[in-house]
Length: 462
Image (cartoon, rainbow, N blue to C red; front, top):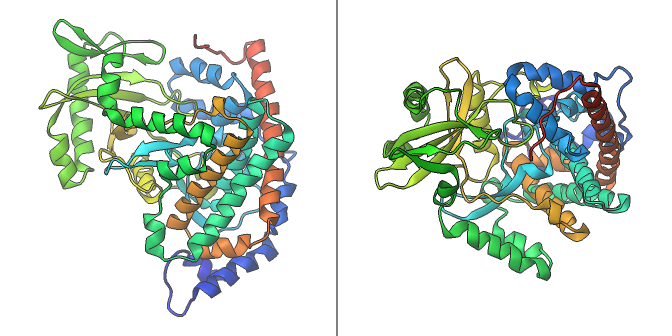
């Protein structure tokens, strides 16, 4: 067993797939599958707000009220912004010790559609800021709890919420099993694409989904976004300020922004493959501004750069700060000293295809960043429109995509051996998901109380 754990996912002389499955099954003696459903917060649990406040030290103080204002909106919004809280909770529970390239913040809204370099629309994990090698079950647990909270935010019944969470776990388990029975190259080539999603949707939803795909792919995203984000001022192009989400840094002139970006962009260029460097060299930076995104990322420095090609076409690149993963205190430090590289290499390992402009760099002050296209035919799941059936289907798709990511980066044979063919694990994690969703709701209530008492300042968006 020890040798198999130390050689997870790697070919070893004399070790068969049957051996790996047997080793995974043997892990049930140490970590029974139903033990994951018996989870409850420890009596010495660190308060969620204390964990969040500690993480604020690496964030922009002027954006923290916006971050907490977004988290205040609902328990689901709070959950999305508190990956570090959950990491601290589940790290103290039972662990399989089977490692994958974990997402680290695996909730429903961190999956979505995007275009591959071949312009194929894929549905997969699309936010890997917290990625790190860690136990595979941590991602599954976080996904399942997010399903419960999403269902509750939609006013669905507790039965429907638990059923959807269990469906996501069942999809994960059965897909891992299927991947363990196929060739490793087939795992690498596996995709969840728009056609697969359309086939799973109810007929009444299919046309609307296909129309969204058509609208998103008709024009390049930068051309679509350009008139919304850019003004012409004195004959020069300038990103339009719409505070508090898009704004220029202080009163510094645009030309100084561009000068200060030259060294970080030169470092970024060196992280690209040779052919991508040639492509990047055909663009010129004309403006850069802060652009606040997401919930979990609010407070970290995130910039948007407007580049124009030699042919006069726009390209928006997102320049996003990367700090230490919330998993590091519990799963160990990254082998990459640069956190931008950690995120990029994690994306390359996990996603079925990555952005052609994906790379990393270091800012003037030593902060770590990674760079990608701001939008590349990206499709956000419209969870607010989901009924019971569509939420369940979407949860299953997320489970499918997560299974592919884990099978690609980890040891699907051992994981499948542990999971088995029964629904014992599915039920256990669904039970955990309900319990953890209850805890997230209590933590959200504490945030509301802290805001009311003035201990936490918030800024609400109009």
